[in-house]
Image 1 (cartoon, rainbow over the protein chains, first blue to last red):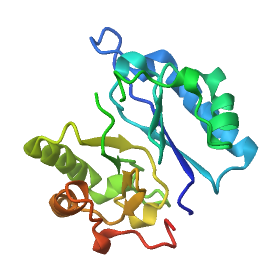
Image 2 (image 1 turned 180 degrees about the vertical axis):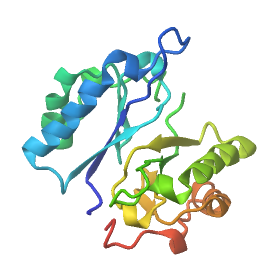
Image 3 (image 1 turned 135 degrees about the vertical axis):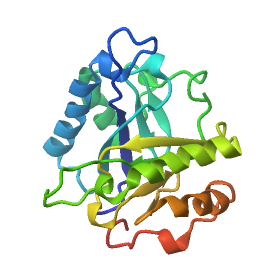
Length: 108
Length: 108
């Protein structure tokens, strides 16, 4: 496999109901993560983009969290309906989606 | 939390015994992953290094796999005893550990 141009890390951390710390798993990250794999397949970007699920990325209150390297852009509150735009703008055209960027307080 | 200078992704993918594809979980990645968290705590590098566990990173035959961004250096066959050297050389002094780098065929 080739080293990807963009490597997308999608938090799929779950915590049980009632846990004092929120989790991306409680906020429908699974549907959103599936959409990343689906869009990658539809666009046939296997040589350019890699998508990897992760444990906790840290800023749980701002999740679902998605982190794109090598640039280290962190997105927050990402939903399934945001994923196509992340591909259109960032992953395929190198323009991060500013409206989804996590505030510097959380990832500065 | 600060954006880390080095973000270490440690594959902890498991597959059941007899599965045709090997997995980092079958090759003691859990002990190795724990050592990353332990070393980070011992060295108090919370502001500089972040360690995140992941699902499959791809080159399963070469695992346990560890990937360091932003530079995108992939290590293979990483064991618990290699972790201190990765901190000493790469994470604290920006010198990737060449002997552990995955061949370009797998991550080129």
